[in-house]
Amino acid sequence: MIIPLAVGDPVPEFSLKDQNGNMFDIKTILGRKNIVIFFYPQDGTYNCTRQVCYFRDFADAFDETESVIIGISGQSVKSHKEFAEKNNIRYPMLSDDGDHVRRLFGIPPKLFGFLPGRVTYVVDKKGKIVHIFSSQSQVERHVDEALKVSLILKKTEDSEYKKI
Image (cartoon, rainbow, N blue to C red; front, side, top):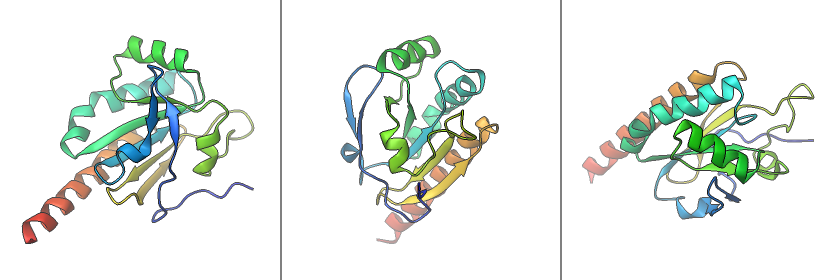
């Protein structure tokens, strides 16, 4: 039985290869940046391309909130590389071959038996999950909600800093 992560849980530590074949270890950004992790079903499909490109289009806004975007799906490094180059994606696209990280997060590997789940997590600088959004069809809402929460995190951090 897969138990999904919930708001308030710590983000699991993991390492996966990115679209360039480099090992990406989440520990390198934990505690320094807010993190937006989105799991998507497959490179190149219509809705996945819309979602990945929508995150791309708002990458500067996420940078301003001190948030790192990470996309994860089960395709190979080679598939991610081709997909990222075709769509001018600059953030890490991680290859979760075998769905090991997907299972760490408690996302069923196959929704309704055929399609991997589409879930977005926002993680604060303390490494806690502060927001989860899951929808197969509302691909742009994944970005909208993640950016809204990232802006709130940034504003809260700025306010706390000013009190010191």
